[in-house]
Length: 402
Ligand SMILES: Cc1cc2nc3c(=O)[nH]c(=O)nc-3n(C[C@H](O)[C@H](O)[C@H](O)COP(=O)(O)OP(=O)(O)OC[C@H]3O[C@@H](n4cnc5c(N)ncnc54)[C@H](O)[C@@H]3O)c2cc1C
Image 1 (cartoon, protein in one colour):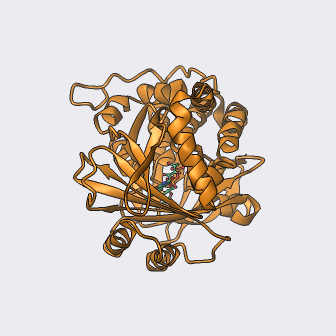
Image 2 (tube, helix red, strand yellow; image 1 turned 90 degrees about the vertical axis):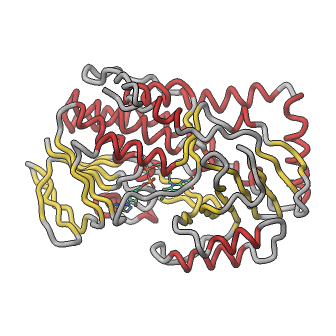
Image 3 (cartoon, protein in one colour; image 1 turned 120 degrees about the horizontal axis):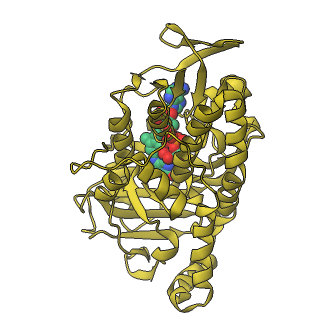
């Protein structure tokens, strides 16, 4: 089968990897002109995530490039440390910058997968034998299946299932991430400031040679052009214009930042992730929001299951089995993110103070273990099928899988 995937971030290349393994022909179309760098550090936690990465042969590559992040402190506007975040609850088993993970997956698939950058699907016409795809740049090609791995604002979802507004739930926050100099001299660590309804943080990355600036702010849902980075930078600058600490410096850096990520904290809820010969995977299907800490792990697991089921049962039964296997797992991750925003970005001073007291005391409180276990349980709440062709790849000494 000839399979077209829309989106070259995490879910798309992970899916292509598995489809290539099973002998399918894969093409990925990505709207950006090149592989997109940037983004926050992403976590994998628990047996399911790690087992899929190991089977893909990329776990050792990821471990080699992991962030090795240490303590994250909440500070006040004068920079005084107030409380250390409980990293055994929030941190995963392995953490890597999203851009580094994307590059590893791209390198793993580029020989077998045809990548088309700077284009997008304009039209999809499905018939009994396949899908005719018209690309924005004008080409028309036929594929047996089309998979949308094109994120929260999925194009394939809009074309095949209906407008985003039908599936989108806004969770009340916006999030921005970009790279800055390591102003605070952070040593594998981070600091964050909460003021009512806002959070700004800086953590070191790439062996302390730079830092990531991360912002969250509460707001009614905003209307803005998602392709206009300057407009998004203005929204962020406006939201943080009165905030102290190192925020004014970070906002100055923002105007020079090449990789700038800005989006709403949202979820996608759909009754079905497939229709005929078209299916969705990753954030396009079920975005659980960054507050779940599981978006990337779910994408990788979803790609493994989707490809395995197509290979084992063909697309009709395969899509149905994929939905059955993933449904509860996704629902658990989505549920875990609801309500987190009011603790992570308190909207008043008392709550911010209360959370800091909580973080200080947490190491000594009996329910700390229960909280850590519950996060892990959500990440492990799936029985991964074994697919005959999905042998565990052994990494080569260079770190590339054989
Ligand atoms: C550059 C970047 C930075 C990110 N930074 C963060 C972050 O800091 N914090 C966070 O929580 N999440 C971030 N994310 C989202 C995060 O990667 C996902 O939540 C998660 O990893 C699931 O990945 P995904 O592949 O399903 O979706 P995504 O990572 O969102 O990838 C979707 C891909 O589809 C592409 N695409 C979109 N529309 C089209 C189209 N019409 N045609 C073709 N391709 C299209 C996008 O360019 C992107 O490469 C970022 C994503 C990107 C692309």
